[in-house]
Length: 343
Image (cartoon, rainbow, N blue to C red):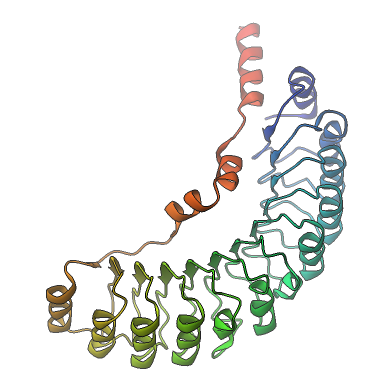
């Protein structure tokens, strides 16, 4: 396990470190990040995933010593709005922030982040149960990537999340228990024209009206996951066929009300559709499936994908992905070299 002493020796040795991963250092205290106040001036990416003892104080230490940070991952860290506001005010060049399972964050902290970090492109807030989404109001057009799985979003929050007008990837999986009826229709209210990938799996209460508004209001859609969206009926599928002219991949797994007429509507529309992920649709007949295949070829794939959009994300915004995958193994190298020396 890496301790504060190990970190101090490593930071003293590598003065021009640009990316540092301390992920998994579950016992690292806030005081361990004090070192970054003096040796973190060149850091662009900092990974603190599952550093359970890192709180607002530790994040403040890192923020004050790493003004050039572009990426930070705080997955499951014990921080609140106080630490996030400190980060937002010190690291104005932030582009990508991972706050997944940061249970102490609210809309106040999110609003501080989007107001201060005007170059922000990607935010992950999945399972942050105290965020309703309204903190995104006034976000910059640069915000293009947003993951918000299993959050307690409301209709105003959804509208705020897309208000910047530049969003290209939106993941709102599993909101059926927080937004009722057609509350998700705000996505198609005029600010979602740039959205290319929309992940709505398990949004079980969205209905035909909401689907129609999104289909008409998001003309750039390339991939749409509607798996287990049980309330979509014929009118909803017809709206997708008529309006989603750029759609290439559609996920309809286990949609209980996708019937033969709905599949026919998809067959007759969405001319760019390349893949239809479909299984577990009880109202679908074998004849309808065969007619679809005769007309459109072998587009139907009887599988289910739980992660979507990766090829598009890498092409669209490589800076996020070099941050995520440029993981520094310097600490491990240091430990290994020390072990070999002792041996």
